[in-house]
Amino acid sequence: MSDVSMIIDGERRAAPSTFGVVNPATGAVHADAPDCSREQLDEAFAAAAKAFTDWRKDEGARRTALREAAARLAAAADRIGPVLTAEQGKPLKAAQMEPLAASMWLKYFADLEVNREVIQDDARAYAEVVRRPVGVVAAITPWNFPIVLSSWKIGPALLAGNTMVLKPSPFTPRSTLLMGEILAEVLPPGVLNVVSGGDELGKWMTSHPVPRKISFTGSVATGKHIAASAAPDLKRVTLELGGNDAAIVLDDADPAVITEKLFRGAFDNNGQVCSAIKRLYVPESLHDDVVDALAARVARVKVGDGMDPASELGPIQNRPQFERVSGIVAEALEGGAKAATGGAPIDGPGYFFQPTVLTGAAEGTRIVDEEQFGPALPVIAYRDVDEVVARANATMYGLSGSVWSADPDRAAAVAEQLDCGTAWVNTHVALGPHQPFGGFKWSGLGVENGPWGLAGFTEIQVQYRAKR
Ligand code: NAD
Image (tube, helix red, strand yellow):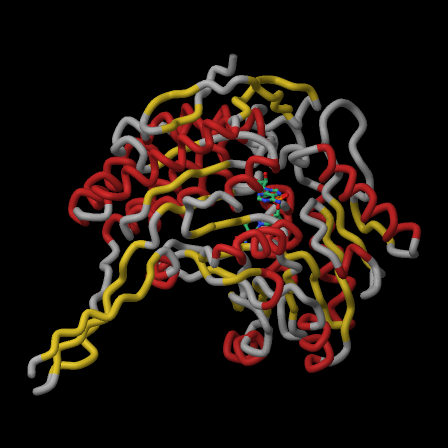
């Protein structure tokens, strides 16, 4: 039996069977998680549907409960952190930051105003546009930021008056289950149900008759399956999918000034960030200086078990991803790219990979065209700004991008030509609960966060009172 439980109708529940959860720092199963049965999923959706009747009625009670939930999460950072590190691999400090950030997100939504807009007030009628909850939400999350990304869904969905069944990735279920246990102490039964299982459980959720909305964060391929699965029932969907973000350095940038931020933008969480820098374009005149500065920074990184306080980066999160990154880098090197630093897996148990900077990789190779989602960054030379903008946009991804320059106005003029959901200047991956986040093209459908994200968990209703 697993030592963490699912939450169904406010109660801790084991499942008929469990599955093993691997610690990526060792490559060995370190603990179990419940494998939710179909009947239990039915129970979870039934509990959410039942709870919806009352939960939708009292906005004040929802705000109070969300504030309490935020406080509990912040207080549990030291409990959730080690559970997250053991299954996800990230350094303990970063793991402890997740419940703290999630707490901030819940608090933001607890305080966010839900607008009523008067659209007519004349002799004929008084009409308002109001937001109504959609109903039960099926929420599905990935393995890179299990706690933070759950809070992006829980906060707005619950504030809007919806109830939820949440499923974390089978690679990182335990931290979310623990979070569910903690939040069950302050949320009414059925409002937030947490179940765990494999991809099949996700499919059952998205084809289940009860949920009216699917909120999904994960890969493009799964996002497309989910959109298809939602279509026959016209379930609402928000899809936060993958990215292949370009960062473009302009010729007046100072490599010494931008190196640390470029490093963080590309390598934080081992590059396993949807909006990480995945292609770095630099002018020919600066190419060698940027590569040297970045490679020197990357070569200093201490990679190791996330429980070791000295580790700056942990392992890649799972074996398939480790093999994918290893394959993509090996293929680039075979195709003529050079490793300015790194370039290979690290010997020993666990899914450790040398943080890698590649030069000489071009469009047409997987490291440039696909989402590597790992600690390997291609640096690509360009000649002309118009040409590089076209190259940055020549992809079906469109999550985010950035432009780097000593002149922020000049950079902004280039950044606004990027076809993506967030265009940063002189930074990358700067996010906040007030800031809508989503992707163009295959990177997503709809946005999360801010009032725009909240709106995604609502239906518009016109309330129209005739005056004559
Ligand atoms: P994934 O798509 O493999 O899995 C995500 C979740 O979907 C998991 O919980 C999984 O069990 C579930 N799932 C898998 N198949 C399903 C199906 N057919 N129906 C329903 N559910 C299914 O993604 P991943 O590998 O866990 O995460 C990495 C990807 O997530 C990357 O592409 C990354 O860019 C993306 N991501 C996007 C954002 C964003 O906000 N845009 C944030 C983080 C990660």
